[in-house]
Length: 283
Image (cartoon, rainbow, N blue to C red):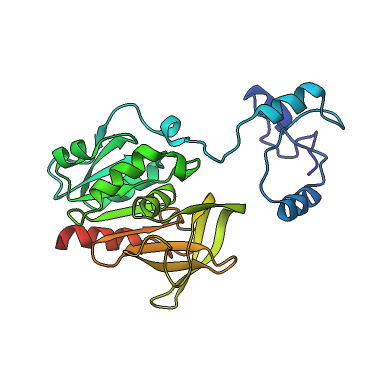
């Protein structure tokens, strides 16, 4: 929590504060971060501001009060791309369409590395356009914001989740799929952030160490997802017992809340990509 004012490495050309200042990156120092952590853990996730001084000014307080709540906020429309594009060789034997709600680059690398051509489409792409592209499977990416606010995506996925295509979703894609099939999402008191969240596979009992970064979750438990009778809960978080994975009882459709491409420590969760690719080959 303390910022060193003197570099101690022989290769250093300046201080950390000088380097961050040149990049216009704000610095928080001399703050009791453990006390701050305990406050957030007891009070729940909240909006905050970084300001100089002991007490925030009236202008800072006003700006904080005017900042939007995450509830009801569609950020996928900001994080998505402006136009569709293609990654991977034209002669790849598998063709995947990926909805970009704020997708990470490593996801595309994994698909291309495994012999796929990926057509990446904006978040608001219609079901008709997806069918026109004639993919072997559909991928729903991660992304920011309140999933319930992304109504256009929920309506589109409701059309596409008819069993005609294997579908795999992660993070926001998992939440949107749950909503499209009749479920509900809830805002967590404090989100799941970091690379060491334990998740249990309910079918095998295996515990996966996963990377997570989300503030909402699909409502449900081991008994299922209320309102979405077609969905079966496959994974639960061992810290707070929230839903971490679902699958369709009849169709090759499944999703997980965490980020399997991040693979913290051992590559515990990358098997979900293999599961999806196998579904493409057997469809």
